[in-house]
Amino acid sequence: MQAGLKEYDDAGVHRFVLMLIGGRLDRQSYADELERLAALYI
Amino acid sequence: MKVGFLCVVNEYSADPASLARKAEELGFESAWVPDHAIMPVHTSTPLPETQPGQGQIPEIYSHMCDPFVAMSVMAAVTTKLKLGTGVCLVPERHPLVTANEIATLDAFSDGRVLFGIGAGWLKEESEILGGDFPHRWSQTREYIQAMRELWTKDQASFEGKYVKFPPVRLYPKPASQGGPPVLIGSKDRNALRWVARWGDGWCPIFYSPAEMRTHLGKLREECNAAGTDFAARYHHIQTRVARRPESSAGGTERV
Image (cartoon, rainbow over all chains, first blue to last red; front, side):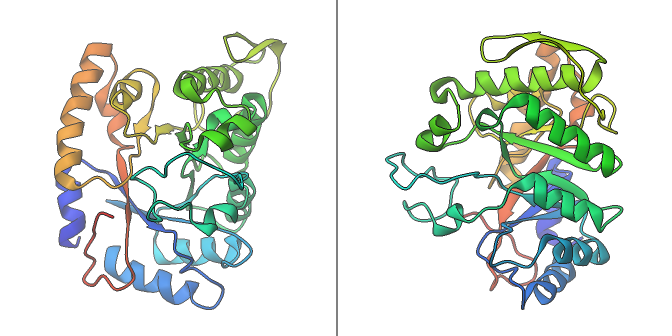
């Protein structure tokens, strides 16, 4: 687990939801963007 | 730690089926869809600090699909991905119809619904859609009570200030016992009391780890005072955090 998430985990947070509200999951780039986020956070 | 993502699904985004398939394949635990059925053209309500946009309501708020339709599409192409409303503006929807939508989706998805709820921050939107804006959290609480009656009883009736109905039947029932978890999305000073008394979890926005730690201590106290089970709510404690694309190494930040 990466450091930023571990801080939340230690605080008692059980779920972490990334807010992607800037239109970054468009038809052309959604797969790459989700892969990038998964590599960072999962 | 379970990791999910919230995204606006609209005519410009990837379709919800493609998003959900890819998210499940990559190991995301949940996908969350926000709710703004309409956006008034003329508003005077100040944008709260929790919303992005530097004081102006961003154009994207006028381009939000119906969350239950999007979640249904997502459910149809996945088997594990949980499906959340982030958040459903409860006073702005008819509670009996919402109860049926939620129950149906939870039944068809085998209990994968996470019912994130809010009361709305935009007065003009709320009033157009039937919200009693000054008392919208009281209205929300009552609507949730009514929904739980409908989800758990063969014949449910309700007598409240905002919703009244004689015995009615509503099927299918949710797959989740008692209905899907109701996660209160609020930073109101009373929010933790609500979570302790009638919520199943808490999903505030933009809190740091230190803030969450402090608030969870208060939630434990509220649960003790209310005689409810903190541990039962503990599994649905979450926060939503915005992430800038240029952020590296998984750093999170508040906006």
